[in-house]
Image (cartoon, rainbow, N blue to C red):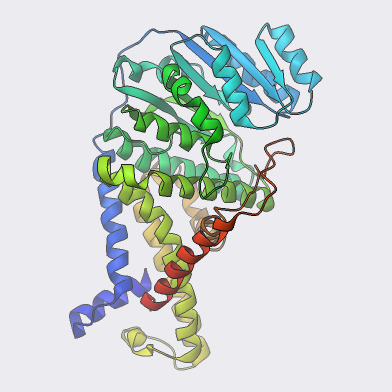
Amino acid sequence: MLAFLLQINALFSTGHIYLFAMFMMWIWVLWMLRVTLAARYRPWQAPFRTTTSVIIPVVDEPVDLFESVLARVIDQRPTEIIVVINGPRNLGLEKVCGYLGVRWAWTDVSGKRNAVQIGVGMARGEIAVLVDSDTIWTPDTLRELIKPFRNPRVGGVTTRQRIIRPDRTVLTRWADWLENVRNEYSMPAMSVLGTVGCLPGRTIAFRRSILVRYMDRFLSERFLGVLLEVSDDRTLTNYTLLAGYHTVYQSTALVYTDAPTRLRSLAKQQYRWARGSQYNTLRMLPWMLQRAPILAVFYVSDIVVPFVLVGSFVSWGISLATGQRAALYEALPLPAGAGAAVLTILALSALMTVLSLAIRFGRHFAYRPTDMAHLPTFMLINTFLLMPIRVLGFLRMAHNAGWGTRSGGFAGERRWNTAILVPYVLGGVMLAASVMIGV
């Protein structure tokens, strides 16, 4: 943010145009677009009655947590509940299903997609509700979730999602902040357009006919020659949009989920999400450019921004170390010593970035003001964890990797993929260009 303001000042004083300043102006334009669209969002209010099949794939969830998840679903009386246990036999989970009277099946084939396919095949409800095995429903989740299906053009609906007990660690606070930012800005904005690009998988409802229609493709579709099981929620959302339906967000349907409390686990989760999100963006890009250009802008920006920021940091580091383009900082009241001047620039940069985040995500801080004290930490996590992971996730899209966070999950294919270099070439070009447009 400091570099952006200095470059804007230089633009008006000298007429010199900095590409990085133009990029930052674009980021703010996108933010204003999201805010404007989100302001038009309203949840569906009219009740709707239909048949519902709740499908819960599960691998190795702790028995007490799974029992709590299942009991809350039972309390809301869906038409049917189907649990699909996949991977090694789990007698504890089977016992829970038995004494709660829930229909269940077991398959020795590891992987969520196969479990979803089995569940959809067993289901009979008009609406199929896919639920993660660690997601906690609130009392009105199901009733609120199905309301948008009153509109026959709606094919998929997602919930408002928050983190269980976010005050446990700074990582759970950050995860809850990230979820609420999506809830307040991105999700409502895309929902207004009827094109939520990813219906997050903790709890999603689809017209079952869509899942049946695309199930074979769901199990076999490849990207750059790789069968990727990550990002099943985004993939099913893609199919819903391709089928001509709207995908929407229902803010009154609230669920809670857990978040990693250790940095290593959080990094693995974010890496898996980064790969899944970005490969699906590239796969859907032709459709988005034709049918949902604003969605294309949002998602392409999500890919480009991390590369620009990482490349800019490299460029700024080189400039500070070599003294290049020092004239840009002459507008600042810097101390005489070179070391003190560099520290001052870094401190001002951090302060301006924190203020930028406070402005752009003010809705969250209005909801939870105490998080303002953690904003510098959130900034550090975004800068030094999330952004590099997004870049790494893009570069490694064509790797035959598995689930990554589940010991009994899909393990990936074990064969060489010649297309592995394609993301590296694209990513290298973006990084090189980002270094060139830096300060």
